[in-house]
Length: 195
Image 1 (tube, rainbow, N blue to C red):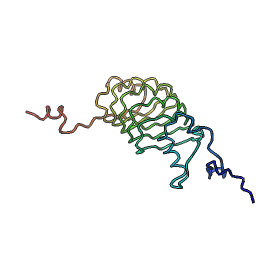
Image 2 (cartoon, helix red, strand yellow):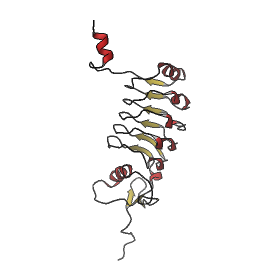
Image 3 (cartoon, helix red, strand yellow):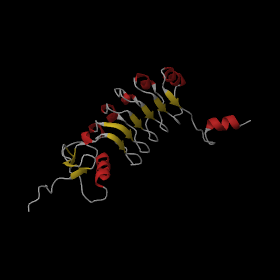
């Protein structure tokens, strides 16, 4: 009996739809997709099966995508995940979020505990309601005023935030969580404690 399956393809079984399909729209060998993002997503689908995804249609990933604690520093390839609505990139080594602005369906985004300085790339995320930016190096948050659907933002431990912008966000009805933790070795704390 001859098999209908091509041994060169990787098949993914979608349990909810009781359907088997092939990831084949983005050729990893011919695109500039960051292998770390793709390898993490491959691991999510294949586990430790020893199989390798030769191609994957990242636009078919919808709903929630959790990539926290994955040692990610480069978001190349993420721009293809256009159907994701909830994205967790917390606890990584991300400095640049250039690929984020193509994810127009995002409603919730967690970028906490990274090395992000600039968040201007959030412009255009018109569906974004919930945003976590804790423990980064962000100082300019004015772009958040342009996010029409933003309802909640947490920016804990970003010590250089402009308080005027925080107040403007609150005036727009955005729930803002903000405070800064100072360590006893911080010169500002030492100056306050010195008689």
